[in-house]
Image (cartoon, rainbow, N blue to C red; front, side):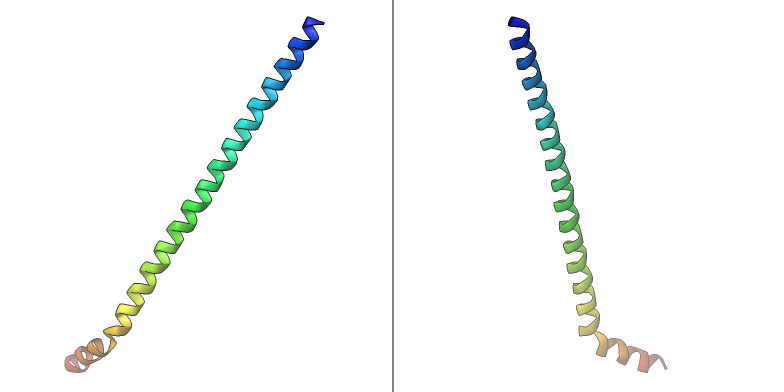
Length: 69
């Protein structure tokens, strides 16, 4: 009977360990996804800001072009 109890305890511990590892991998994947989304939002914000600045200074660029011509 002792062998069976020991085997069951070992199986339970192994199963628990595997679940913890899978859970850790899922957390890591989620963190990677969140990091990617954050990077994309920062890039988009930067690109939007640059475009907005170009639009704001468009008249100045046009005047400089006219003077050059």
